[in-house]
Image (tube, rainbow, N blue to C red; front, side):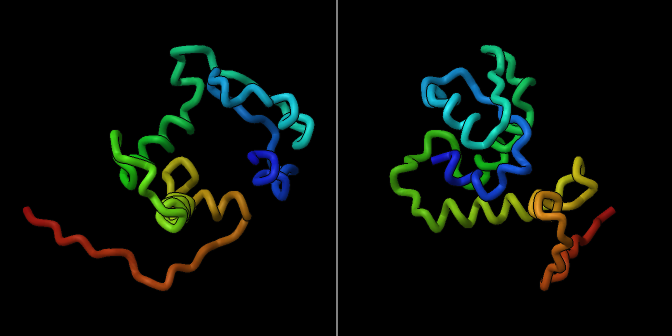
Length: 119
């Protein structure tokens, strides 16, 4: 399934880093299908998966720990994915992952929220 999802973008998949779970047992097929290198993080070295750890934290805004995920609809997942992929990131020069990945500039139709500062 992962190879199918990444196939249209295989020219941008230079490396993939996985955890050491059994769900990644088919990594050789994925590497061959995408013509990319696969790496595995060392156990208990979360800093080797920084983007993954940060993304998990951002996803927790939509799906908190201990939440029953069996009741989550595909639409809810897609909404969270869209919101996160269009969220500007400091590390990307305040561009969104979508803008960087697709080399585009997104023009938002809504102005940013104004914040009233009190002293």
